Image (cartoon, rainbow, N blue to C red; front, side, top):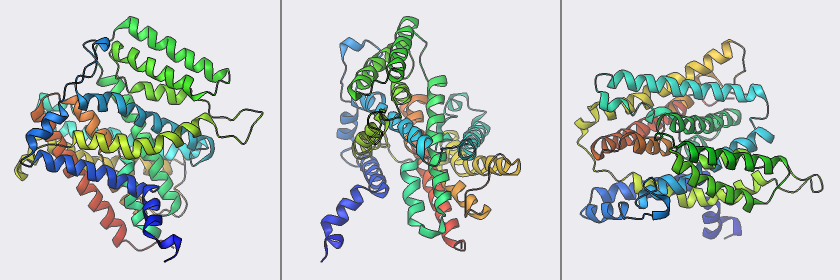
Length: 393
């Protein structure tokens, strides 16, 4: 047995791959789902709701374990999303305006149409309409392993386009959270957040590259945003935008702070934050199949399975026809339609928004069931479409 075929080498490759991270998130989520539907459901619920409040943070501070993961640790996830966008903007497949336009406009279409689809289904149920943003985001953690499994049936440029679109989806989801799911603002705390943001921007412009400086600013900004009424995970977005993306002139080959932070955060988020988030948030008692026809789950399923591919494909088609940007190299319209179906895999951001939109356990459980069903249907439909289509030349 050679070193490259040994079990240890296979494990290392899995740990370093996108598939390994997706399996960790899926496994942790299924574990939470299984426990919530087992004789140990009471113990699982008690674990999720374990009190964990810091009096110094006041009434708006996280009150239990699940809230600390959603409001605290998920800051690292949003920070990593912004860092990946900045890395790609500097040297990757988002390095020009035309390369940015196609996935960005596709993401906008993939946000607007699913939201309208959800509202069309739930328009006669005011209590359900607050979840309009649940089906707007694509989960790159699950989408990437699917297209990697399809191998040569997905062109490399099309794969890059889909990953860029998923990243922009996450960014648009963050904007939606900031604008529509925050508490009434506290202006003094908001002013403090503005001062901290200006300080980090100033440090970046002054050439400060010490990561600890921005880490400290991120934690202080998290506290200020929590007190202000805005969602505290936005501190990760702001910090990611403030980190310098260039190397010092004296050491041009040295990794930039953006690259250093992304490299350090990636395994933490992939193997720690996201599986823990999935484990604590996917635990919902499975309803009977007929319950998926209720307004909330049906709206989410329709948004993910119908609205998402229609919005992504329609916006991309319009973008190409207006000559804003060309199709990715080696990509046919048939391949693009299959990838648009895969955009309906919404999980992490969808669960996150569902938790903000539906404080009541009943509607939240229905939303989680809809997310699970809709994402599974989108994954199967997209995979079958691309698998059965003729392989591209």
